[in-house]
Length: 287
Image (cartoon, rainbow, N blue to C red; front, side, top):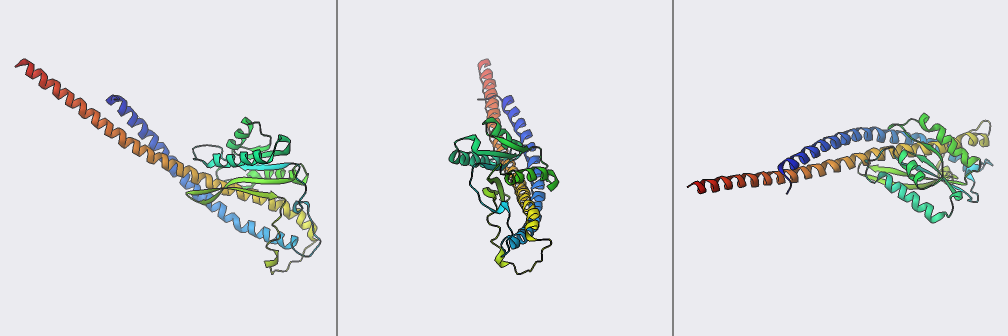
């Protein structure tokens, strides 16, 4: 059995750890609330730009754009969104496991795909395994603005426009609730669902100068907005996952402290009993 001093040191150490995890839980809860608000407030813009683009692309006009056309898949781009820090449970591992599984099932050579990594965890994962990373961004703010990712989003979309990749697949954690995040895999490019809502739009638009030139501007913006929306969604998921992980760690610390306290009391009681026994034995020997 451990000594009283050793048990006491473990109790103190666990208590200090509990204070840290509790503080991190509260910080993550605050960040999650703000991140969730950011993700939800971006939805109306995303839906409106999709509505306008859908109306143009789904109309009877001859407007066309390379981003709307499927082509033979020679090279795939994977955009994976992770965090820069750990202590978030399975937040990163679930996304990276899904990415790795997809690569193993669909590719036999690194020449067939490339990766755009957002977040240090995803970047380090790919580098350690020798996976090709074309672009990356590390150190993204907890509440990122579009300006923070505009360059990367623009360059990623440009990879498709320049035919360096023939499709772009997105991997990230979708925020469902504070206790639930869902790994999501979606095809970002080519945009093949853009015309789904066209028939439901009653508004009549007049386009100047013409539909093709408007699509030339709007479609890249729409694709970039999807990337930004996924990042906001992932950030809300990250803070929620970290809050949950820290709460679990705090609860585990409470349980461990209770067990250690019980062990400490038993050890102290045993020591006191031993001392009393020795005293009684000594007195009996003197009689």
